Image (cartoon, one colour):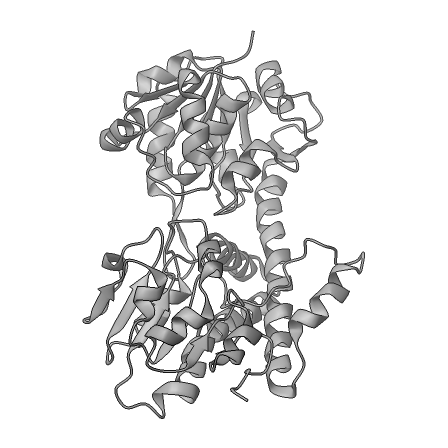
Length: 426
């Protein structure tokens, strides 16, 4: 008989993980102390935006039970602590809510239940949790905003922190993990906790290389996007490498891990200067659009109208944590702006003269410059010729190459993107 699986914390991590559990055939209990959030879920209103999540939840509604009463967890053989961990602007985690949630959950577990810490914590956290060590585990979460359903349904591997990695996992927990058909890697609590941070550090290293060399391309006439295919064909780098240039690190998770490494280095006397350099590079890259905007528009246009497409920190998510778009907008308070995002409303913007448009083209109407800050797929349908009809100016800043640069140039725009020299009007 399959175990009943519980998830405590119905934010992004918990909702996506619970939906995947149900889709793998397990009756899944979804618990949160926020009764309003549970009411929304019960009514079919998903409080997070992820491609395919709404459909997955609806398809598994007979296997999903929602409750704000912790006693519902008594029936579960495996219970995950799966609440998102809040971080501040310096990447420091606030674990007070997690400690409170763990205390609430433990007081209602059956004595034989398996407790799994799924939310991201610093090395040393799991070992201190007051639950029998042979039934206490840490599991690395590897969800990605915008691809969370895919990652939850088809994980690459499970990294499991244990008190004694050489022992077999409890049967109920092992049965659940094996249903996903991926490798299971048991290791010590601290190794598993640090494995998550190690993964993110490797990703940041690749991102920093891409950003550094993309800027060189912009200055010397090379095109980073022509170089990328050569890198992806190198087996030492690979086809899935994070080598697309961007606007610094955002979203919260990577920043938290870099801050954790710096803190551990200070506590234990190790060197983390390369990590501090990544943080510095990320902050520098966040201002790329602002620098380009000043040099190409603001220095020459005394009363510009600015259009911004995209407020979320990346496509396919509602998250605005450390969003480069919102960071940019805080520097534009002297000028009126028009914004559009498919998910995030203009109310998230701190700006004295910000108008929300009903479509991307309407946002561009009468604008002197159009800036595409989030590479939403629907923005790719924008026709440069239509922008010509509504815009007052002729500058497009498109860091992620959402629009076809040559087509923008052909209809009279100066087109500026990351990793290549500006495409000026001929």
